[in-house]
Image 1 (cartoon, rainbow, N blue to C red):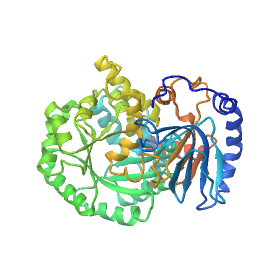
Image 2: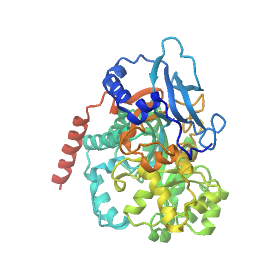
Image 3: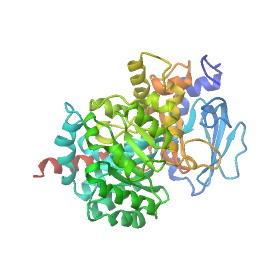
Image 4: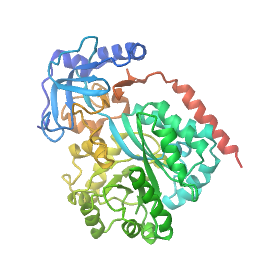
Amino acid sequence: MTLQNPLRLNRRSLLAGAGGLSLAAVSKAAGPAAAVAERPGQATLLRGAALVLTMDPHIGDGELGLLKDADVLLEHGRIAAVGRQLEAPRGARVRDVSGRFVLPGFVDIHNHLWQSSIRGGCSDQDLVGWLKTCNLPTLPKIDPAGMYAFVHLAALDALQAGVTTLVDWVHAIPYATSEHYVQALDDAGLRFVYAMASFKGAEEQVRTVKERLLDPLPLASAQIAVHARRASIDTLRASWKQAQDLGLMLNSHVLEHRTDRDEEQIPALREIGAFGPGLLMNHAVHLSREEIALVGDHDVRVAHCPLSNMRLASGVMPLPKLHEAGVKMGLGHDGGTNDTSDMFALMKAAVGLQRAVHEDPKIHPTLPAVLRMGTLGGAEAIGMADQVGSLTPGKRADVLVLDPGTLNFAPRFDWTSQIVLNGQPHNVTDVYVDGRLRKTGGELVGVDTEKVVLAAERAAARLTSAP
């Protein structure tokens, strides 16, 4: 089912959706206060959404599984049911979302949250220059408290923009700093995958971080982060062995910049036996045709970071060819070189880059395809599609509510296209992670934003004064 024509407006949806004032006012007034009163384990029924994008064609119409005028029931941290006129369980909170959209939370499969510390920095540099003048000199100066401030800021930014699952590629940092990093992610309240790099000779810190810091947290999981190169193949092989021992994916930057070809990254990954579904490659901009075929044949997963690639003049990923090869792919913000969190801008860039390069409006990704990349596609790429990425009953209740009744979004015409082409983070009025309300009425629940920003500013001031 496609929504190429305007849907008929009734009085109720016009007031709640296109007008947007009455429902928004109620949500904003009752939102944070209502969230405080939320009982642990309380079911929530999202009643009467104008459009539900389930991302499950077995539930709704078309590849996005669309349902009009439908309800979504969240219970015990899971999606309990999706359909029309659902019965509310006893004691459930019933929330009127008429005129709004409901969809799965966004899945960001490549980020570096600590790089909020250098937002906007070295803006006239390509990847090599940016690494040399901004990234590498900054990281060693960040103390544990500063790390908490930067990561907490960036994680909350992602959450308020609708990202409910995030993969963070974390550089090698001391254990004490790791404690603060993980604490910041956990405090933010999103689902996260902590991809850990390690110091040479201190590889066991990865196991320690996983077992002591991550395993006790229900929303946390782990990967092992590497930068593949043949010159350090022994270290790479040890990381792959550890990933296998711990049952984790290997997460590597691959062929982001044209000079990465000299590091023989793909030959090194193939030589150690990592080239398969247990490997997530980030960027993959400069793949040859032969390498694209290999990626598809071996079910290697790929993160596409179009805004970062544009910012750093890295090039344009061969996304249509990778799609033809059947590669599982998702989208990534990529930390400091994305400068902020906006999955709508990321999806639009992924579409626009390919259309501009190929001069073809039908080239992959289409608008429905990029919506899938930002949700279920990302979950598939990181092996979490059994948990998140769609509103399939039984999956974890990571859910967004969008308001189309805003100046940047209205009027109604082709809603699925408008989500990508017109959507902005402020259209995300409500965010649930694991069934828990994290944002409502357009505001993060229980978060003193001014305090978070002030902490990051103070940490940044310490950086500039550090030798």
